[in-house]
Amino acid sequence: MAFGALTIGHSHPKLLNGLKERLESGTILGFEYEGSLALAKLVVKIYGIDMVRFSSTGGEATQAAVRIARGFTGKKKILKFEGCYHGSHDTLLVSIKPSIGKGGYYKHPVPVLAGPGVTPSTAEDVIIGPFNDTEAVTKIIEKNYNEIAGIILEPVPMNMGLVPPKKGFLETLRKLSDEYNIVLIFDEIKMGSKLYGGVSEYYKIKPDLMTLGKAIAGGIPCR
Ligand SMILES: Cc1ncc(COP(=O)(O)O)c(C=O)c1O
Image (cartoon, rainbow, N blue to C red):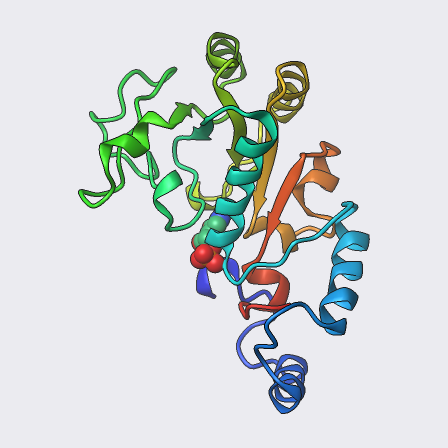
């Protein structure tokens, strides 16, 4: 099931017909075209958001979200959670599945590079938090808010095996982000299409940026 991307399975006739129509009328058109507008309107309606920007992969989307957070706040560091995965760009290839013994103290994990090709300077720009530990994460944010541009997380991490957020966890991230001028990013690349309106609608917490992908088009890049 392609890590959850194939919510309607392989080769569903509707998907095949849509793809055929798209191929016949052109695939890469340079800029967005009228079909992108129709899609953007649908995304805005379903997910209750204000604006949409398209990218070709989920990794591009999370990279763009990080850049926006840095540009908007003028700060540099990104708070990322141990166990969450956001794509294969270097910026967030840290502490995805660190081996036991390397991650440090569980309440304040140290950044663990995903592999030898990721440079140590990558780790300087991220702070790692323990998912679902509201108290520990609050301490980390209160200590480092001057440097934190954005907080990125899978609000229900499928990459850890579908872990629901504990009561108060997302609420606290929202509150602290508002208080300390931090951009809150929900990475719903996987979960966004499992619930109508996404995780944010389900838990009634609005992030500043939401990344969607994979499953919203049955595993096909769409725009
Ligand atoms: C939560 C999450 N974000 C981002 C990505 C990256 O998406 P892509 O593989 O389209 O670059 C993935 C990929 O599995 C993901 O699970």
